[in-house]
Length: 141
Image 1: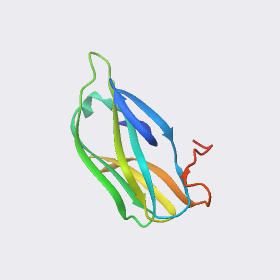
Image 2: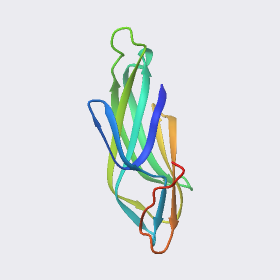
Image 3: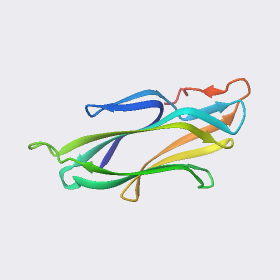
């Protein structure tokens, strides 16, 4: 299994196995904490080998730097085998959340686990910046 895309965005969706992202970010500049994001999505695109087809457990967790989980979502997913002689198939997934709270300034991480193994980790840096109160799109993405 290979992670092709793992991102946090303002919004993400999957249509006909095509993953679409709107405003990816890794930094939040807020006027004050706690800070609540009205919308936050976690997007994932995987490359699945024929031998990995079948049912798997997908977990997505948001945690602070102390390891305290602020969000934890799990779902059973079924990877379809590749068609014909194609050795791999793609799988796209989007988890959309509303009113995601960041209780304090600091470093956070979104971990993506499949069958209990971390396949990707996405950092989120939440900082207090007077006068902002919005998501800044960093230039390093």
